[in-house]
Image 1 (cartoon, rainbow, N blue to C red):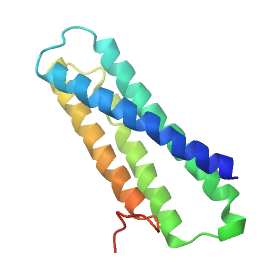
Image 2 (cartoon, rainbow, N blue to C red):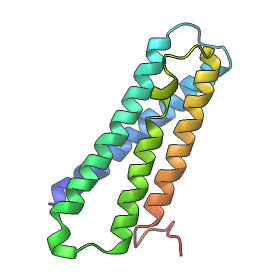
Image 3 (tube, helix red, strand yellow):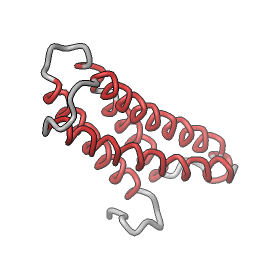
Image 4 (cartoon, one colour):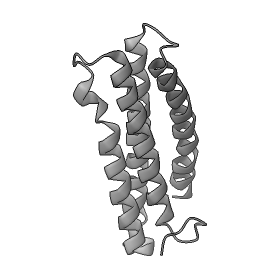
Length: 136
């Protein structure tokens, strides 16, 4: 099952890349440096939330597949629950995608969602043992 953990580790780089691209994109939209292209806004958020979903799915499969070897220690459950919360937050832009809000407001909301998801993910990572960001 190490290949699954490796895949889980590799997908994080895609999440980081898409997060950075999205942060820059939505900051430029907020600053009105990019006009038009609301479909690109939706596409970026769909890719972002889809990658978060993929990461959670791979993590859950790994969690279940290795539970016979290591059991269900609390830190693994905390990590999984935190990442599921991040995935839920990543889907919030779906709530306002068809609203009449100005594009700049949607861009601000998307930017905030990405930042909040990143913070939640970092908190979830910090719960893992042997991590330099470990809490408690």
